[in-house]
Amino acid sequence: MRFAHETLPQRVVFAPHEAARAIGDEVARLGAARIMVVAAPSSAPLTDALTDGLPVAHVHDEVVMHVPVEVAERAREAAEKCSADALVSIGGGSATGLAKAVALTTGLPIVAVPTTYAGSEATNVWGLTRGTTKTTGVDARVLPRAVVYDASLMLTLPAELAVASGLNALAHGIDAMWGPRADAIDRVLAGEAIRGLGQGLPEVKADLGRLEGAEQTLYGAYLAAVAFASAGSGLHHKICHVLGGMFDLPHAQTHAVVLPHVLALNAANAPEAERRIAEAFGSPSAIEGLAALRARVDAPSALKDYGMPEDGIAEAVEPILAAAPANNPTPVTPDNLTALLRAAWEGDVPR
Image 1: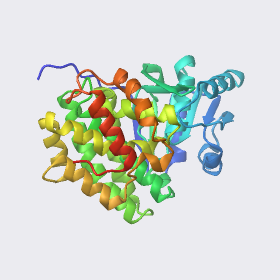
Image 2: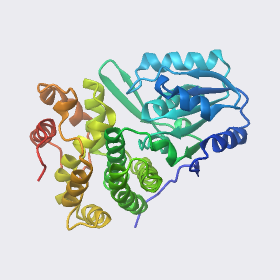
Image 3: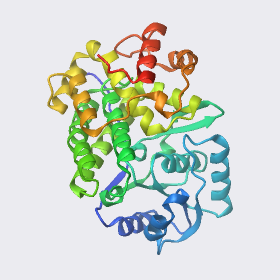
């Protein structure tokens, strides 16, 4: 029990069916008078409903997956042009990520309103992509000052996206078990996150319109992200960031596919984490627990289904090796990494 744990300062509001009121309250707390809203065009009707009555100076809707540098620069210019004094992001991880990119250079406070289970809103991690290379970092300026969670906003998610997004959140919890700075507090938070997601995601899959399933999944997603922010980015996220930037793969689906393979690689050499994950799933083993959950929700299974070329397996090995944490429970080698990527590309069942 020798460690230093830091809990990030953030206000979190769970407000089912009351997002608009809660956003207004949080903007008022900031004393903001000129808001730049960051939201994709597909979210326009929701954005209008949630920001009615706010002092909106500009709605920025150029939201692109993996946040290309040039997209981030245009958003920063827009924030300066409209003299924004705060940001409100509405949407999934891409919208949150773009708001973070603006905050990274401007210091503007963010009120994040997630509409998926991405979890980025609860971390101080930013990501930018230049060409085919995605770079991530940690900076206190990008942590949203407040998060408004309204589970009713999740009820219109397409089933496939809801499942992939929830499994992306689960990846935060599992990676937090052995992240480079993982400590005892992180593992407790991650265990409860896995339990919540393991309970909520099947309910979401069975009935997309049921608020209780969405609430439980959102609760688990938040805890997983908090644990991940403290523990740091483990092997799973390093793999997914390299693959996502290199091949422009869909973020949530990539995480959903890769997760069981990283768990299979690390489980034998991380017995305490493996036991905690298994207990959270209520399963004899972590691998069996994750496999059972994936079967119940019909999880994505193969990277080739999302556009990764077969020759990308060899191409990705060196960048991932360069990014892999030195203290990963199982030493990462060219051979076992190639085997992992091959299995994830093919959609093989990990053992």
